[in-house]
Length: 47
Image (tube, rainbow, N blue to C red; front, side, top):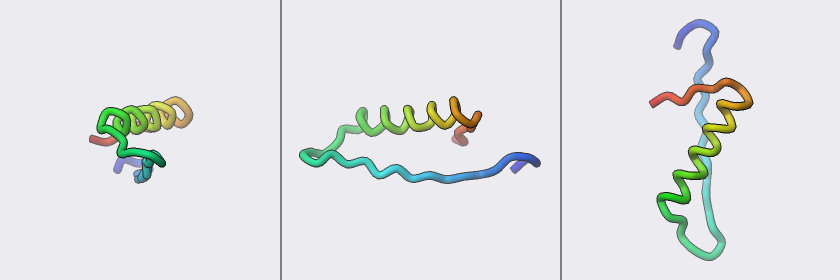
C-alpha cells in the first residue's frame, strides 16, 4: 500500500423479504455503493 493510502474492506448483506435477488440487482447495489464511496471520499476500488 502506498504511503498515505489505507486499505479498507466492506461487506454488504443484501436481502429481499419475499424473494431471492437477481445477480443484476445485487450488482447494481454494489456498483451504487462503490460510486457513493468514490463521490464522498475519493475512494478507489481495487480489482
